[in-house]
Length: 336
Image 1: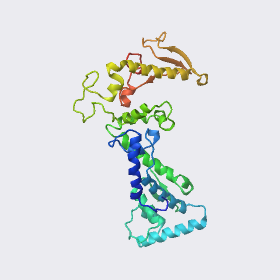
Image 2: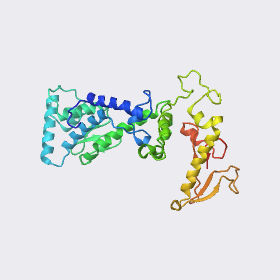
Image 3: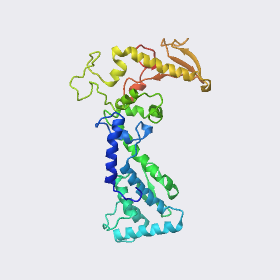
């Protein structure tokens, strides 16, 4: 990858072959967004490396490390060879600013007959669509700039990591902007705990694994999908069978919904009762004495006068989740 032995199209063929197998392992169909496979784990995606992109990143990384190495002889030779390449392409003296502009693809230049590490780095920079840009610092040294940070020569060990973060962040934003497949992912990205099972597999059965990825992307075969003609619920005959309806509102499933709610509360209670947490359980499923409301919070926990409530959202929108009123009601998934 670093030497450009194989072209990006050849690495893309490997990505296409792996893409089909990964979707099969996640029980996703061909309509699922690829951004879910290649996005960051902090946003709930799978963070699968993209071979075609990795080849581009490593070409830039190799060129930058040659220019910023601590070996003065190698650094001088690399700088001289880059300057000659730019001068031959642009037909004018190669100043540091001209070199950075040429690496960014700003100068059209004369096409060369040979392929070098510098022409590879230039082509990779252009193909990454401004995920990284070359620039010059006050000492006339070449540096790299991404959307969030500037990489000086002393940061050469972090080049590949920084570019990957930019590309994954773009995928996360694109996935969350999708009207159907991105709704749940906006909430999933709020905390890393939502995706703990992807790496550890803890508390996850095979049946859960077959369900969770399709549920996140709203690809379950419910009647509420736009392409289904009859959109009524198959169990309660209501007009619209959405994923939120099946999980939280369907009357025939209220017993299981409440059982799920109680199981989660039970696990929270077990964790709170651990002495290392420094928490004390005051009330469980009872009205708080002296309170102005008659709600019965599931758990009232004391830790420096902190009250905790847990909510399993019935809608895939942040604002609707925040507006849910804490309180104990049959068939809802809300606790305080």
